[in-house]
Image 1 (cartoon, rainbow, N blue to C red):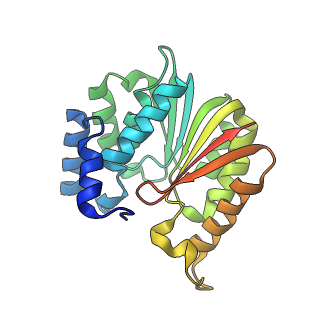
Image 2 (image 1 turned 90 degrees about the vertical axis):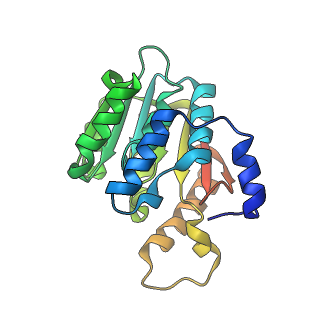
Length: 213
């Protein structure tokens, strides 16, 4: 989803940091071999994720929704020397694909893959996090928020993807559309919960940056 005219969007991308070669290769192979390649974060949003991570310099990252590993690698670029990134995805068929690129990146030994239901896995993670990226099933966004909050330090950041949901959040709600209903609830939650402060950025399909108070 583009919020700028395509030529202006192209200018923005051209004047942002270049996409690393490894991520170009990952993108190409994802489009060739994997279903729903539009789920990739992509060049521009990937550079935004990388920049935010570099500003935070997290010692621990949690990603909910790995897909083919693009966003994990972007977030890993900002990790401090001994940091660890935990990434969760329900699709075990993508695990080897992800691992190939993780190992090629130089961050492979610090990226821990979890396969299964994030609702079950998150409570088993015996650690705290500086940075969380939520990009999984939309219907569980409010649940993921509540699960991760006890694991976050003051000053930690939550990044939430697809919060504009191709504009559906401002259209009449279809009673059968559980994803959009969940995102409406989630967006309101992030804007009203006393424990956090948030700003929703119209980047790609919407990216909310939330800081834990």
